[in-house]
Amino acid sequence: MSQNIYIDVNFEVLIWAREAIALNRTNASKSSGISLKKLSQLEDGSVLPTLEELKELSKTYKRTIATLLLKEPPMEKPLPADRRTINSKDLGYFHEKTIMAIRKARALVGSLIELKQDAGIAIQRFNYKADLSQSASEVAIKLRREWNLEEIKPIKNINSALEAYIDKIENLGIAVFQLSLTQDGLRGVSIVDDLVPIVGIKRGGETPTAKIFTLFHEVGHILLNEGGLCDLSESNTQKIEKWCNSFAAEILIPTTELLQMKIIKDRKSEGNKIWAKKDLLEIASYFHVGPLAILRSLLENKLTTKAYYQEKHVAWNKPSFGRSKTPEGRNIAKETIKERGRTYISLAFSAFDKNRIDLKDLSDFLGIKLSYIPKTRQLLNA
Image (cartoon, rainbow, N blue to C red; front, top):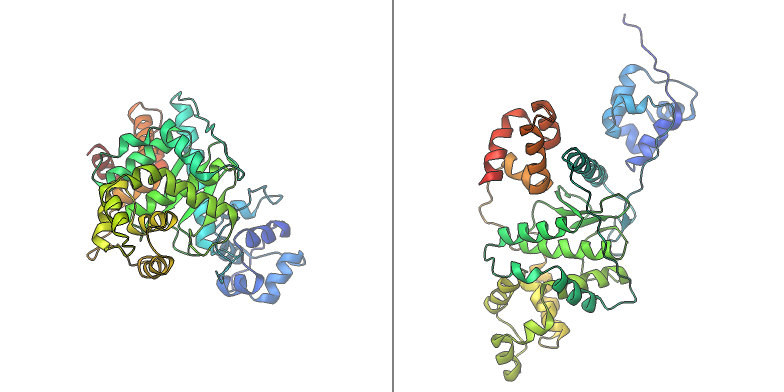
């Protein structure tokens, strides 16, 4: 009969690991297969875990065994503020996948800083600030001009436009990652407590126009120095969320330019406030946004009715709206470039080409198996 091997651990580390992934004891017990009574004993220090129990806790808490063997609970930065609406049934609680996405974003920015420092590239600091006392629209007008966003307007391909906007923001000193935010109704994340602030955009199930709007909404949070996990819901009454939505709307759809469009002037003279979807799509395409964003700007300028806007908001804000009817299968190389961004990927390949890292290091930086590296390089250079 095999003898159990007991492992000497600090019970406070076990408590920290469980709480860090937002699990109560009951759920941790169910997930690990360790009885609630035994888990309680492990956490009050009255008994030690066996090696097998420690392995199960490692899987449940998404931590390495080495982490669970630390002498003291490590200092870990808290999650960004919960900016979801008060209607969210999960308000104040996040799924473990969301917590893992935040951890990943912080790890990625650490790797990005390492790659830049290794290449002798100075870390660009984001030096723009705003506060809630300022008009979001006025801040947007000023920064749109300073950041020269107008030069992106001629880009017709919406995916290329998204990449161009991301490049602009990264060149200002913000790291942008597209994350797998599959839980908690989140569309964006902003983190301001790192050397390089982070914007995370939901990668899957979002149109490029939705990602562009989310990008600038989260930039608004960074301007305010108020990070958060956001759903961008119209029903959100938080002042900060409203400010960030207004900022994103004005920086992408300048009011003066919108009102000068012939189609807008013609509709205004007719007094017709009910808009055909094809007209909204035409205007939206010009500004690299979705039709709902245009309709919201029209509402702000009293060019549509609140009832019509709310009707379309319900219809067009569904997760399936705007998705491809024939989605492509998984493409690891494309997902890797989307997630980490071209700047990050280019720096990793540059470090490898200059023999500063080996092939295994490159695989670790890219987060993919060795077999996917050639395709990723090919797609990056396409």
